Amino acid sequence: MSTSLTLPATGGATPLRARLLPLLGAALIAATYLMLVLLQPTEAAAGLASWPAVTAFAGYLAGAVLLLAGVLPQLPTTVVALIPVGLVLNIVLGQFVGSTLVPLYLDSIGTVLVGFLAGRSAGAATGVLGSLVWSLFNPTVLPFAAGAAVIGLLAGSAARLGALRPYVAVVAGIITGIVAGVVSAPVAAFVYGGTSGAATGAIVAMFRAMGDSLLASVTKQALISDPADKAVAFLVASLLVLALPRRIRLQFPLPARAAARRAKA
Amino acid sequence: MTALHPFTGLALAASTVAVTLAANRWWLSLAVAAAALAAAALAGTARRLAALAAAVLAPLWLSQLMVHALFDRAGSRELFAAGPVRLTAEGLAAAGGLGLRTAAFVLVVLLYSLTVDRAALIRALDAAGVPAQFGYIVAATLALVPATADRLRAIGQAQAIRGTGGRGAAARLRSARLRAVPLVLASIQDAAERSVHLQLRGFPGGRNRTQYRSVAFPRSERVLCVLVLSAAAAAVVFLALPWGA
Image (cartoon, one colour):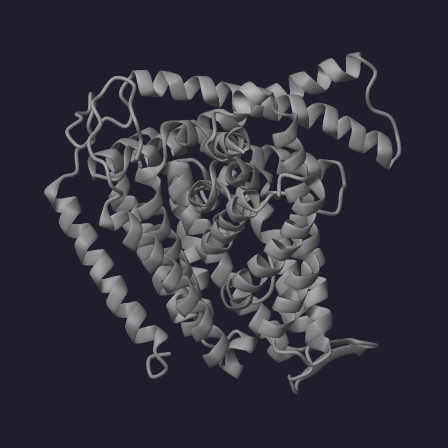
């Protein structure tokens, strides 16, 4: 729960809504994925059926919004102030890396950074908020909100397990890339009929030419592109956290908890 | 859409996108895209809308063309074949339909984004009971994007004076590190300081906080929102189910 320096505390335990909504959101995202994978119609591969597109768009977006509605009111103010920085870093560093001709997009460094500093809930919320805010400039990212939430969630989980060490961060990034790629593949396949980039589109086209279904082709392409991208994003985020002065680092929940554990030990 | 309440514009945009996606008809997508461009012309933002949409849609269309048309194995009406490339009429129709559907979605959402009063949208969200954190994060992000870009430029200039840069991958990486690390450290330090100011002002303030300037949501627009969203939901269910499509 957000705490105030000037107002009395309003309550102790986490309300039921805050526990229930993220679970419902995660269940909806999982159910949408399973439904699309199990019932994928062959005609959808040719872009002729509309129900997979509507299901992928609505199911993933509704799941992500439920997740956000449960998590956001519970975040402390230090984390709420940090999230816009994470979102802006996603945008600015993503554009900057693009301008240096590095063949990666690295548009999730801010989300991973917030996950590393503030934990799973804050990471997931940053992922969803990033998609909602960025959709004002690029609407195609909107249905990928669930995939972005998964990246933030796994970044927070990885930080708890010691991913702030650079070599662990690379492994955690590869695993996150695999999960995020698999979760996001139905959106790319059924809403956009492929991918949003020309280079990744060429890889999907290659798998399609080899006889794979659209979902299988997009999933294979995601399994090639996303682990490398997330490994670099996790490595960069871990190096940035380590470069932070201790005074600032300890203002955020995960480093503060780790320092307290070390002091107790 | 600036004359309408932000939620009315949002309801119209969301309904249009949902119905276009569910209908999946090229002529409807084309009509919606043309209507969005016409509305943008009336609002005086057609050029900006076209430029933004082109930047988003160009790589998508190229990708859809490659995935569905250039290497099609299923289509029977072959238009061109050379090596692995096999262009068919069916593949072109699928890529064209998907491209138009995506264009309609992108143009409608961008039209809303360009014409809505963003400050009014945040005030309306706040008044509707959406957690204050959401409004703060959206407003802060929109304000921080240009400020952070300026800061990155200033850091880059300062580092250039110190002699960073050069050719080759190692020099580029070193230059990127020398720009990114100060940017991130300064941004996080600012966020930590802002959080103290927010807490001192009682953020998020509880349920009973009031607004200095509220956004009027006339009854007629509320009724219109309910009607439009209900009709769109019914249309989506009918169109997306197998017997409707």
